[in-house]
Image 1 (cartoon, rainbow, N blue to C red):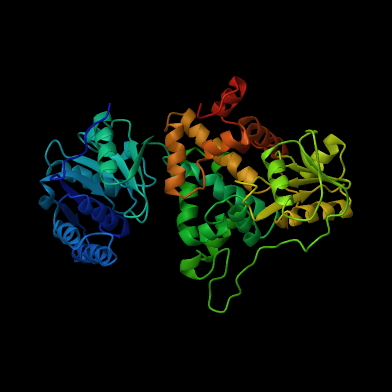
Image 2: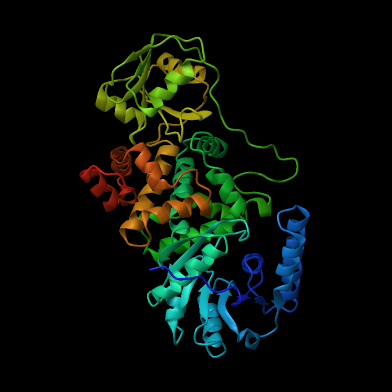
Length: 509
């Protein structure tokens, strides 16, 4: 049942005026609400108000807001000095330090000050909403109102219900966030909510690839950007977030899930944190940002000649893209029917899309020694780089011919060590698996999971929609093969994916 948003005349209080608090205050004021800002640091609320007013002026200068609207929004910002000044608030949004006791005390103190109909919205990114509410006399009025940084620009808001949250409260906050121009999604209070939980494999699988020597950081990043379509590679993204922050979130989720192997932190990242190499902000992380440092470049194979007869096999997305791309070069080729999952043959080499086995294992099990695997791409027609893995049994000349074929088709080719699943395929499979588990456990809907990952962390596609596109049987095979290769529970297949495969359905059917 839908609920109307809070009326514009409702006073919104924001406690904590750092980057997140100030951003939330800006959003609420722009939406027409009177906004009171409070901070326990002397002068911080006044400074935040001045900063937000400067932002409104800048938006007016750029023509994104009329001068009148900017002036009116600025006038709605009110710095205050004590909790008692928030007595008339209809919603109190907390963006203070990520500490359970501090948040519990704030809302417990507010209960004695605000009216009975005032709602509480915590902006926590990792603390249980249920636990925060446990200290309140009326925990039903509390829900998570989790914005993403920077709040004025990021569309996503997670509306998080704790065990005691009244459904009408969550519905009102959902409608209010939508009225503020945001895209809200409902979630239950479980570790990491949606985004911070489902995003873990993007970092974890890349860290494992690097630890196993699959490729260097710059090459893995380039493949995930140029083939996977991700805006940033995992290593540059971790460097930007800061390893102290990213590693702490991973550890928090891992501990909260009772050390589930799916969320296992990485020794590589632990080393960076121990060294104080936090990323951009400290000058060093996976990359070196110090003055004079040479920017790391991805590894690409030297140009090879595509020697031998070329056949494009079957009608998969990868095969059809190869056909289109080869039409633009002088190579001639034939089309042949599907044959054991191959997408192409050149000379004695057979090319396949990875299915989660190593090329060496696949060659041994299929009896095709000259096996070359390619990685998944978001769109094989538009991708500019592909990762490949070559079976140890493969003749070097056959591997070179396969590389030459892909290069002729316009791909930069990065050869990985023969690690199961390569980079994009294993990352997408694990992201989809985690999203599926969140849906299966009632944390959110499939639509909310996809929307959250597109809007909260700018993924090129929602992981469940992506899994539907690749094919759920293929995703299940990749996960099953990864699990068999590593012998770890980490790659167990979500029951939701299993059921969908058995039913012959897609997640979004």
